[in-house]
Amino acid sequence: MRFRFSGVLALTLAMGVGPWAVAQKTPPPRAAATADQKVEQLENTVKSLSQQLAEVQKELAGLKAERAAERQKHELEQLRREAEAAAAKPPETTAPDVDTTTRFVSGTRMQPQLNPEFSVTGDIFFAGGNHQQEELQARHFELDLQSYLDPYTKLHVVFGYHAPHHESTFGAPEGDTGFVPSGWGLGEGYVTWLNLPGGLTLTVGKKRQQFGVLNRWHLHALDQTDLPWVLQESFGDHGLSGTGVSIDWLMPHLWSTVNELTVEVMNADNGVAFAGSDWSHPSLLARLKSYWDLTSNSYFELGLDGLHGDADREGHLNHDLWAVDATYDWYPAGQALYREVTFRGMLLRSILDREDGGTRRAWGGYIYGQLKFSPHWIAGLRYDRVFDQREAGHSYWGLSPYMTFWQSEFVRLRGQFSFRKDDLFGIDRRYELQLTVAAGPHKHDKY
Image (tube, rainbow, N blue to C red; front, side, top):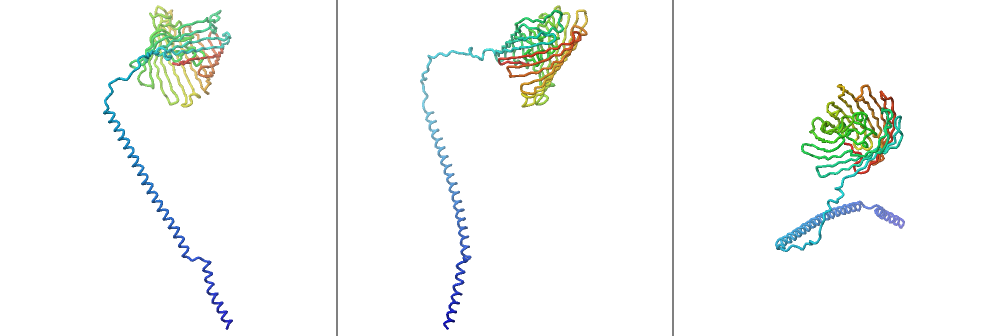
């Protein structure tokens, strides 16, 4: 019996304690559900606090705005009270003490800006060739003075000097050494009235005349070492200049972008084309210039020129010169300092009355092109073709390649070789090395 009771008791304890032990190892499902609820409650609490914080911040911003408005209102009220008090204050009847012992002296006439602008340019050559004596030549120097006298008037004076040197003897009479003595004189001196009614500009005095493009330029401003040969044939080595009156009219935009008409009455002071300076037989020049902007990178200019004067002092022999000139220039926008292409040319017709009663008609012209391929270097080539304006059966042509180096806007170096074939005198070869220096505000004026 004891054995049975003990077995039954052991079996009973095993049945009671076993499920309890299993229950202690595995948590009941209700405990997990309670943890999820707590997390959800915490999330709800955080959301509620965030909403309350946002409401508090909104109320705080509103309070700040109200305080700022009240402060501004208070400041305005304060300014208004001060202005009313100042307006109600009676004005002062006594003038303040002023120191009248100090004397002021005007220095207007001593201002540097009233002085003329001075510029100096000089050309130094080393020349040689078949008919050219090899030598270093301080050939030509200019002193340039410019000044605006008032808003409507400008003064321009140029004095020139050339040192003794030798010119080429090609085609010169036998025995001619080509020696040129030193000389000093007035190159230009004129007054210009600007912006006159009707788009007019009036110039009075001595000036280089506007026949074509290049004749107006001074020699140091040319693209080559010398004037084209057709201009030298017509007017001499230094071109055409005279004393008189010049009128420029900026015409309306009729057929081109810009149209300009120039009329000049001069004293015919040119011993090659005319009889010399004699106001009893002045020369008359007219030039019509038209300009087109072809693209943003290029332009084209066309000029028509007519010139009339007397070949003798009696006024019986006429000398008429007609010309057409053209210029094309390409310079890419934003790269004009590095790239540029220029073509320029002229065709000239001379009609000269002869003493024997006949008339000599002759043609001549030039064309050149040049390329700027870097900020400092320019290469070019000029072709000249000329028929003698006074002697029938005489003509010549030539080629002139050149290279220009712009060290700076103040210093320029150029090398040029000229080949010339003459029907009467044969062949001439000439080389020149040119150094041009400039100082002052007006370096190389191109009109």
